[in-house]
Image 1 (cartoon, rainbow, N blue to C red):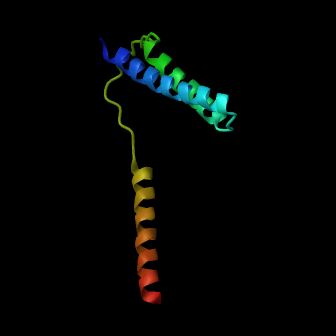
Image 2 (cartoon, rainbow, N blue to C red):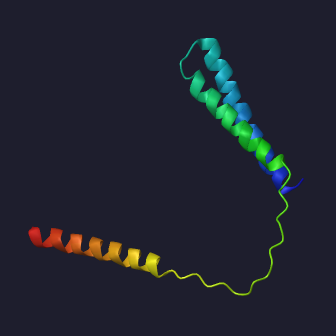
Image 3 (cartoon, one colour):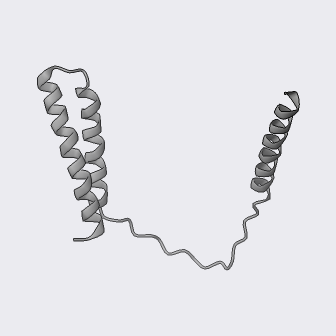
Length: 95
């Protein structure tokens, strides 16, 4: 068995459990049947996804090494870190 089939089997097991709870709640007239019904459909969709064929990637033209500047992200992290440190220092000095 391949990994994708095992994953689908695990999700089918979860689907069966949620479906069983949905049927039991439907028979009992409980309002939670809708929640478990949605979980049943969600796990069923997750079980079907690994069985779908994988899309074939389009070959990309080799353009060489690409450099992406990350200075804006580093600046945002430093500003956030500075704000947190200043907030902690300010809270300590107030007390």
